[in-house]
Each structure stands twice: as structure tokens, then as C-alpha cells.
Length: 163
Image 1: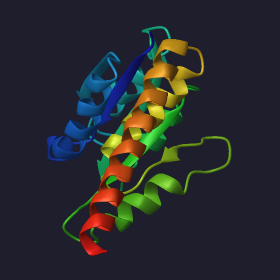
Image 2: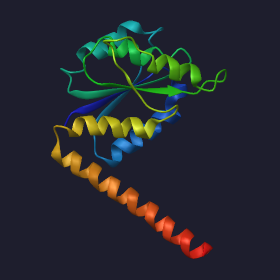
Image 3: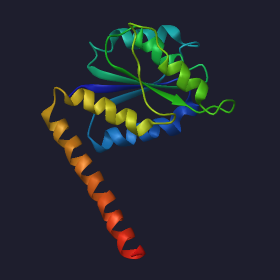
């Protein structure tokens, strides 16, 4: 199975990345986590991206706040799918990161999840890898069915309580 690379711009992004890691663990997807900054460690970030395919990665998740150039810097150096997670900052509550992550120029796409959307980033990476992995696709199908069953249980509980 392909690995998922997880890059965060700062250890302040760890609470968001923890959700990503937790979801990948539930699906038994191998991953690596690193802190690389698009601005402070651009050589290391570039080297990771350039070598990601040969190092067994199938997708890369990049989380950053404020200027949030990390996902774009990674995407500029690989043709693997890159998923950006915009993270909240104290100034603009993550809107700056969201716009920086989603507004990529033509030719360098970055898939972008919600501000703080670590779990969805993991699920999107899993769906990408599952295109070539039927066992993982089955796990995703089972998760969707389980999630639907949980909602229907809550519906039944509310219905019986309020009627």
C-alpha cells in the first residue's frame, strides 16, 4: 500500500494533524509526519516533495496557517496529489490560510479541505490511494456504511423522544 506523507508547517498545527493521523490509523494506512516550512526550510520541503513518489508515497497532506504556502510549495515539486489543510491563526481565524491554499495557479493544483479539516484530508488521501487498492476501498465503503448507520440510530432516537 502507498504511504501518505503528512507535512505541517509548525508544531502548532499538531492538533489538526492528530485528527489526520487518527483517521489514517483507523484505516491501517502507513504514513510519515514531518515539520517542514515553505519559508524556513524550503530545501527540505522541496527534497521531500521531489522524492516522494520514489519513496513510496501515494498522496501528500500539507497543513499550514497564515500565509499557508506549504501545500503549494509541495505541489510545485511533485505530481502526486497534494491535499492542503488550512489551519486557524490568531489574526484572521484561518481565512488567510484557506485563501492561500485554495487559490493555486493553473497547472499546480492543491485539493483543499475545510479549515482544520484533518480527518477529511486523511479520508481524501485514502480515497485517492483506494483507486488502486480494493482492500482499502472496501474499508472506506464499510466506514461510510457505519457512519450512515450511526446517523440513522440518532434519527430514530430523536424521533422516538420528540413524538
